[in-house]
Image (cartoon, rainbow, N blue to C red; front, side, top):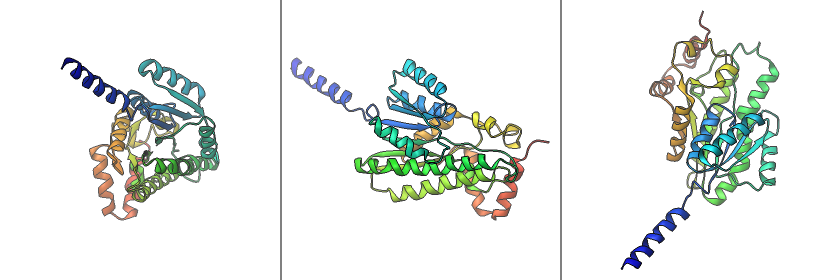
Length: 282
């Protein structure tokens, strides 16, 4: 009887160790070098995913790779790529194929915004914003999705924003790109029902990340008068929502209320209120 119990116990242990869907899964994270991206990387590393870290800054990526290896013994791959360039998604896919890397989870996190009047912001920078926030996100999703569907499993987490729910004067292009991400994600989630692949649009509100500095948002009322969420809290919320298969995940109770309530007001009113929140503190 003792031998029988021991064999059963060993069998259970073997099944447990051999059945680790997360350990055999690989997540690709764009914009992984800092902020939400690096927090996503830490969370997936803790869950024993293999990581594909993508961003422009090789130094930051290598530093993150070393940190994750030291703390979690995480296996990771670094791919340096400027995702704001035209056809960047196709170049990235070619590199994935060259390295024979399979992507089970895609986190489209890379993105940036710019504060100011539309006609005063550099035109090239706005074009790059659209390339990164919209074009690369869309193309990369399209290029990686067929293999997920063929395997009948996969997850896509697109980082949108509460900016997606109304027009945003003083950040007109950024708000419009996030509206696209939300609409695209919801439509795609509907198309993929029954395929084993889920799509989640994460919609955080004000979040304390490098984004604030890069977008010159530090003096806006949004960040001066409201306490931003931490990037790790937002990342945890997003990963949990992704695992649950939520289509739209708005972070924070007040943000959920506001994103729901704006639909009852005319678009001109929504726009005027967004302008007041966005303006710099005088």
